[in-house]
Amino acid sequence: MKLPYAESFKIKMVENIRKSTRQEREQWIKDARYNLFNLRSDQVFIDLLTDSGTGAMSDGQWSELMLGDESYAGASSYYKMKQAVKDICGFEYFLPTHQGRAAENVLFSTLVKQGDFIPGNSHFDTTKGHIEFRKATAIDCTIDEAFNTTLDHPFKGNIDLDKLEFVLQSNPKEHVPFIVVTITCNSSGGQPVSMENIKDVRALADKYGVKVLFDSARFAENAYFIKTREAAYQDKSIKEIVKEMFSFADMMTMSSKKDAIVNMGGFIGMRDHELFREASMYNILFEGFITYGGMSGRDMNALAKGLYEGTEFDYLESRIGQVAFLGEKLKNFGVPVLQPFGGHAIFIDAKKFLPNVPKEEYQAQTLAVELYIEGGVRGVEIGTLLADRDPLSRKNRYPALDLVRLTIPRRVYTNNHMEYTAVALANVYERRDRITKGMKIKWEAPLLRHFTVELERA
Ligand SMILES: *Cc1c(COP(=O)(O)O)cnc(C)c1O
Figure 1 (cartoon, rainbow, N blue to C red):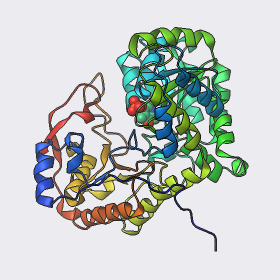
Figure 2: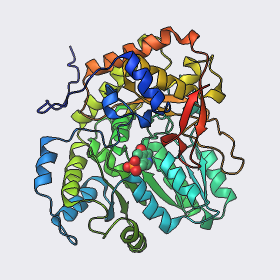
Figure 3: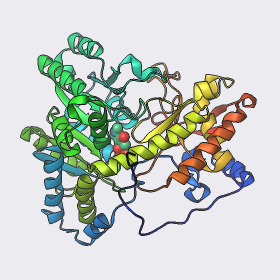
Figure 4: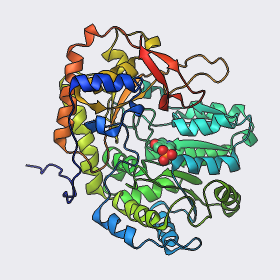
């Protein structure tokens, strides 16, 4: 028999978590204005809100904390991180930032201006936020297959080259500061981009003389999918694939809270010295001096270590295997899940799950609330609330998919937790016909509203 995957780690320390009663949860979620971000973490049994900064560091990373150099300028920790960015991603220049959106803020302050167009694959919400905040426009060029939730396509994060070329053709290059390639594509379901697509995007970028930015939070998971789904890469190591992927980018922004398995941190990688100089000014203004940029030395050390660990095949196999384990369980219960399964999360198609709830009443948010009440499991809406309103008409945007994301933290939960989650969701699925009313908004912020929105039952 072929041996199954098993976790590439064993557990040395545990954190206790507590179940609650349904009655308690009904009160808590009401008090939280039906926004799961407003719950206290001790009101949650299994927290699948995000895989961002929620991973468990290794003993190696914890040891690195003790070796942190907290010098303001030129700390050894800075050089350790610089070396790791060079080794793993291949970028000569880099700037540390306190997280991914800070990297976007610094880089976009340098490159994006009013009236610009930035094509890409389903831009992540903070990426889009930083574009629109500068009165520029994000244009989604993801392949149409991404929006068919049951279609089996190995690389649903891919960019549609015709859509991309149309944008490049119809705008002067001065107004297209870069193309964003999000690896893996979070907003379209943690779906990967193939190496072939990356190469084709690079070729188009060269043809039109524009830069390519990788939004790289889950670059290692993307590399795992390339290795396991793209024939030419099956014998290459993850580190080789990662190097090759980044060789097609001019720059990268990184939320290290994902694939670098740290609780806080980010960076920008660049090839161009002039760009590095310009971005350095904004880094100093917004983040801190260029050799720490909002991170402490110890955190840079742990991040550097995480970049090496997060690109190990055995780790990625057990991580992505656990996500698929949850996905398979749900599928067997008949729950409509996005397929193929993403690298960091399972996405539930709320339009199919709760067809009796009108879309104006936020189907995915309604489902996320129901799952919490059922089992104390916290997922997150990736749908209409997240999509914000159209900046001009102020109308809801109603994206093609209204999803609940169950995001698996790295090296944190066991498969029993996955099993529990699947059963809780199956219970909601069993009573889905009786769920006919959703939510309505009591208060919302003008941008990135999903974090703070206040809701009531419709
Ligand atoms: C998380 C994430 C970001 C933003 O990073 P933060 O560390 O949360 O600020 C940007 N892009 C993608 C694809 C992400 O997943």
